[in-house]
Image (tube, rainbow, N blue to C red; front, side, top):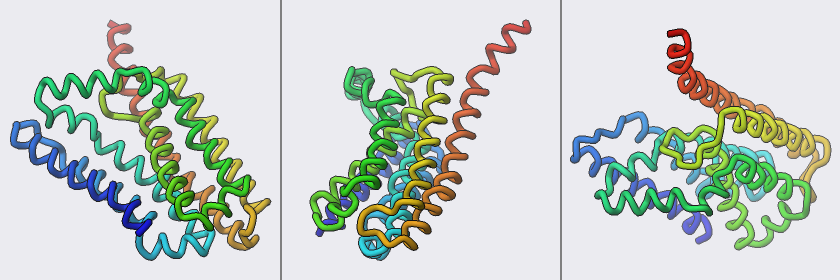
Length: 249
């Protein structure tokens, strides 16, 4: 039942995205196929982390748990953000509904939680709390707490990704310098945490599992973080290139 509860929202957003793609395409606002592929793959990564064999084994093996963390907290949010869901929603809604949705995106709560520092604190800070306190042990013993942690891992990862490299219209977008500084700091915090797990296992986690889990978090996280850095640098280059041409003119 917990796996069904955790996976059901992802199945629903998958269906909603596909319906929105059909609606947008009917209005001659074609949604690129690669974005749909990003969304489907991202949902698959998230569902694999919360339901099925991987999720079952993750409750008994820390290394598998860490693989699920990479899927749920890093890979799935990155793929789903690259699918540009906000753009698709705006294209699918009628004018009045799109305006109300835009007002919601401009609201002050969205401004606060989409700030890179707030999002990074929720994301990386939450992981430090999870693995350096008794929270990891508690979540393995309490199903409701386990579900709450999984939900937090995904939403914190999604917020962090949106705050850094969103390709959707973002009314509260911050400067590239600001995002780059916060990103480097957050990646350093993630890397240090993985080394801390390697050297000092979370409570009730065998040393061998903590070592392999820490290495998986470090090197697996590096692979995804390189994509973050590449996308942010690419967006920065594209945003500043026209200005450079104007200056030369």
